[in-house]
Amino acid sequence: MKREVKMDADRCPQDHPCPLVRICPVGAISQEGFAAPEINHEKCISCGKCVATCPYQVPSFEQ
Ligand code: SF4
Image 1 (cartoon, rainbow, N blue to C red):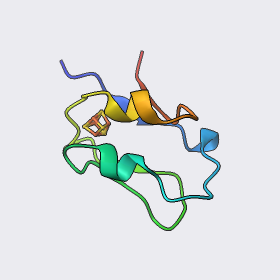
Image 2: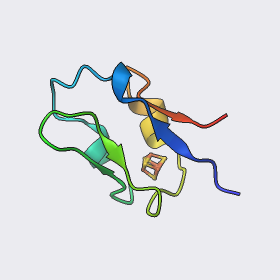
Image 3: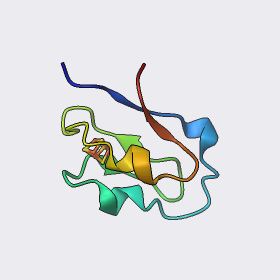
């Protein structure tokens, strides 16, 4: 079973263009303005790139 990635919006300062949007290889991450990024679970392949990249640890694998 695929590991779900969850986004914790409370950890995001929401003041910059999210770099994860471009890092995700399948385009599963989107952002409205400077809001916290959102994840499309249908598209996500659980590669972990966003989890490894975000300095605020907004994305993380569900335990
Ligand atoms: S785990 Fe990989 S595929 Fe899923 S949202 Fe993060 S970067 Fe995209």
